[in-house]
Image (cartoon, rainbow, N blue to C red; front, side):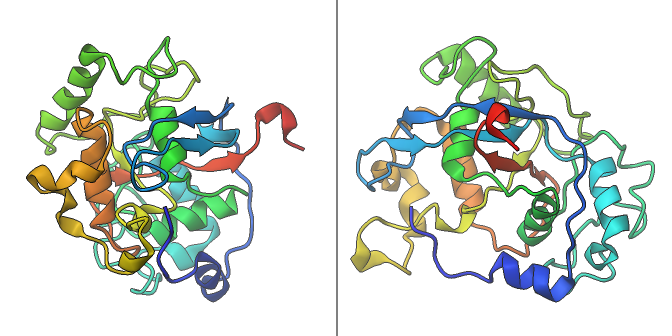
Length: 264
């Protein structure tokens, strides 16, 4: 996947003056490897390769994002420029610097833009995971690194997608998968670093002109594993967003390169 031009996160950090403040967070190690993604690496049928990486065990919570906002008030909803966060940014909070009773501290933070999520991760000396990293981690269940061929596994995920989205979000900390990562399914959608490149064709003649109709009916024929409908829904949703957008069911978690035992 090739990433189309976008407003650089480094520009956002320079404009908003984000200085690094590392927060304690649990990361789990994933050794990576080669796997069959729903988005073929060569645009046709090629497997994807993921290097070893670390992933936050759970999505970032309201409490964690509140600490970030208080340390970096330029990311308050009343201070952040519209180019980095739309008008609904952190709209579920009762105040610019307080989630309030309707957003508990252990719920995943939502209504955050890609820019804000990436700034939080950079502040943690991390980054947002790539799509392939997220998909690699999310393919696992409690005992298998790849449970995607299991109809029961797919059915559990689809059951969550079928539930109404009006209920209050649960707290983070669901059942861990084989890597120790939690809540990759069943809680919120999640930003990925390369969200705006997910539908870009491998054909150079089509660069800059993503065919958004590939997700309409039989138009999805370029995608692999079409039986994993729930994962494809995430691709469709993420690819429809802009970096400043925010939604009620979209949160994030951070990633770092390498394994925990290799970290300095």
